View (tube, rainbow, N blue to C red):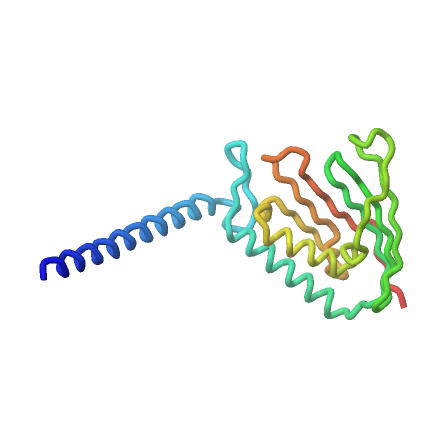
Amino acid sequence: MACKKKSRNLFLAGIFFSLVIIVLALIFVVHYQNSLISGDAREGKAEQGNGGSEFSFLSVFVKHKELQAARNTWDQQNISNYRISLRHIQSVWHAQVYELTVSKEEIDHSAVCIPAPVEGGECEIQSYDPEDYTVSGLFEKAAYLLSGTQSPWVQIEYDPRYGFPSSITLDNPELIDEDNAWTVTGFEVLE
């Protein structure tokens, strides 16, 4: 009988200890999140402070909502034939310019490289998937970046008329030479 009572007491103590740990973890998370949501961060803007970047989960949520609204704007226009030009710069490592003509299911494409600082004045065109540089590909890239750990440092601008991402940048100030930028330099709807 004493053994069962001791066993039951140990079981209850284990549950109590687990609940205490969970409550402490929740207090930590709430405190941490509240310390990040201050000033402009409450409005969904990233905030610089103490030499590093602070962000709120709210700002990432706002970025996802903006992306979805832009996607809806693009989808409502039902554009299936277009020409798009864009530049992708990978920090000091490489830069490439893409020209695509998209017509329903077909993509005609070409690319040229621009010598980046570390390439010593010469460059080679890197292999690429043309789908990544279509409007759908840009939306997918933006969604992917916003879903990752680098999301606080992702900035997206949208074309005011058509809604597609006209600029996507990733620049974490705590990392060196990791920045990327995708910039649409031309867009034309085709008949």
